[in-house]
Image (cartoon, rainbow, N blue to C red; front, side, top):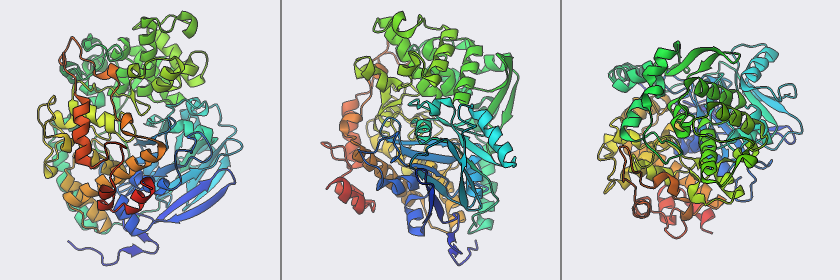
Length: 622
């Protein structure tokens, strides 16, 4: 199909505006970073490009909550294009726990930011008083946010739209969780869409940055509209033929709960049990109980988002909890009161705190209370498994950092340190709490958690999808096999992580139904490049390794690549009874496959040079 001959339109290449703004909140200065084609092709966009841009300005001395930390709001070549499920944006920087941090969100904020005529905004410094950024017409304004401080995330979004007099404006903001620097504070947009993990909302709060607002109609030109239309027609057929597509439309991610229970993937009672009365919280029970309506992210045909009529506790409507939230505030706490789970989800959204980390941290407190490590005098109340009102109170205490909530707000890693508890009891990897996919249910997932760049992540290496039969990548030899056997498949786990890095760089929803070949076709049609599955995988590997190198700069070694005992100790019940991954053997094979140095945990010089990262090798091996 016909490709336009020239690669550049003015100062922009196809798929990009070629412009990133850098804002220093300390002195109010704004600079422009010109995005060159070679850098874009090597790191794509989103979190990959953010990692390369931030590599030289972040190190072990950077205080995550200090002015020197940098926070990047990034789009990618798929953002604001006709590519289905390409509406997302990435926030990246040093996490509140001191490791590489990134979070992804959908909705319409990503397209609005790209529509403002930029590929991203990098923020450093700290304002003397609360401010927000307004990005439009390829520029940015720093505006006073004193009247917004203390407002919840939904109020904040509405007030900014009213102040600026434009309903089309989209806002990414923090609530009081971020203002109070909760270590797992999230960034919220489009009412209740969340860039949830790694505590980047706390980084915003430390910078006195309440929000980033964006609007605009700028469009990055596409190399071949004709090619793109042809791929879209085929993709629609692929998508509608998938049973997973229809499950998401009907139930959202919540629809997985029943299967998760059957295969032992939904952790219970703080990772110590596997059985629970699933019928009380099943997706079918939920739909029979509440009036549910669908909504979609920008340009997405799936519409997996759900809203329910609540009409209680002064709240009219509430976003339906995702699978992760339902388990984190349900079975993980032995809480089967649907009303309370809905309300807690709402509180987390308006306060701006990550539901996974909040649920796991509160469950850790219940576990420690049961063991006698903490008592009523420490917490201010009894902690009884399943007490829904106690859970609600603790969420409010976390957001406000009041009483025992001040300890809970540190996350499980910080809690273990403050309470002098064995770190093997704290359900996190690199400070990020383990999600609601039990590592005993999928050994490949356990390895992904242990080696993940942002810690225990179920999205940047969701290998459980492969073992469920919906995530195979035949172009790279990644196929479904026995979920308890990784012999000869460790290399596949690493390759799968590499591919998922591409999703967060393009940026593409993890629920996309496109094959790797189709993703290459989409990217080539937009940019005019010539990617194939092998070369794009190599790009994903480059991105994964530069993030690892950044973590090495922050102090990460092999000792950080491990699963806490609480999450892999064999259970006596359920579908995973007696199962536990041999992490030492898996890690040795993984390091060999990655060509990482076993003693230091760093990618070898040879591997980095092979990936075109010789300059990075010189900096981490000096």
